[in-house]
Image (cartoon, rainbow, N blue to C red; front, top):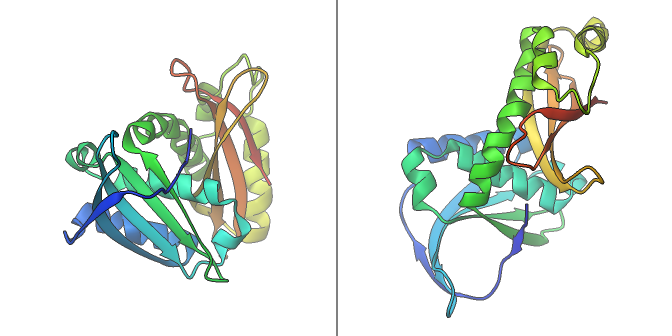
Length: 227
């Protein structure tokens, strides 16, 4: 997954309102990062290049983004925004631009092609199914989701014991929230690392990640960790 640094272009800022689905995506982003998520829409043309129809997200007032690599948070925000779009909206935009404003009022901006987000969205299904299995206590499903060439043994009992250990201290596991997305290289191939927080009854958040290969023919989970 490549991130694209914003460059000079001929730009036309559009005044269209956010749809209900787009607004829900913005609200979810604001909730996860405990900040303010605003938006704009634009059309940009670089000489000799494809015209970009962009949905622009600006996140400010979030302490969380100061603790994350900008590429990790912006990629995740772009994916969350893409997932909130209707199928028609997914086709309507060519790029999602994400701008972060940190505590020092410094800004950084990256944009992501929606066609790239489409492929990552399919990989994210494994992360969501893995996470939902933890929430539902369906630990046997975890073994179905994992790639046996990378995780040969059963993880069901070990994960059940791990979650129950946390629940004795923090109360029931209630939900999860994705906050980061990274692409990493490994001798066995490139992979996506989906990062999130498990949320417990007393408000405690425990970070975890799930790893899925970037190869299009393998959507199984090849790694995970709960911290």
